[in-house]
Length: 156
Image 1 (cartoon, rainbow, N blue to C red):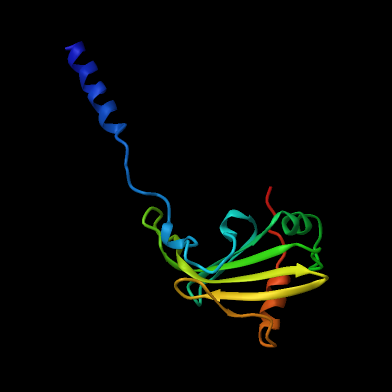
Image 2 (image 1 turned 30 degrees about the vertical axis):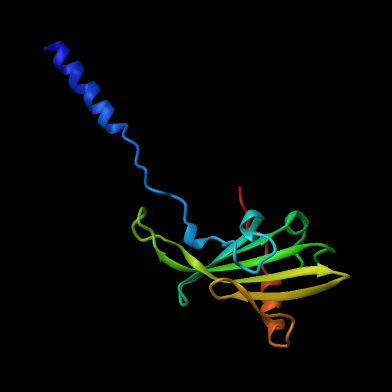
């Protein structure tokens, strides 16, 4: 009888250790090889995030090492030369794992602000694949200011 109980628990252990081979990476929310971006902003350091429930979108502000270090120690938007910021915005979809949660579905737009010679150059990429749609026009100034006014998220 004791052997049957041990065998039963071993069987349960084997069944419970079965690996789920479901792919957990969200490739649809990633930058693709045929996009016009010269670098992948998703590999940079995140500075802050935001959610726009009205538009069903979520955004993350990424920065290169220079921009990240500056945002870490300063609360203004006077980024130094060679700093680069990327505001990546995704459409949302319901999370299959967490009830009530949302995750990125696909990239909606990528906005780039690069600092050279004490000037901030703005570029916006949209579409599938991501293509440059605008940059440094008078209407882009408000969007650039909105991105620059974001502060680094505080973490413990």
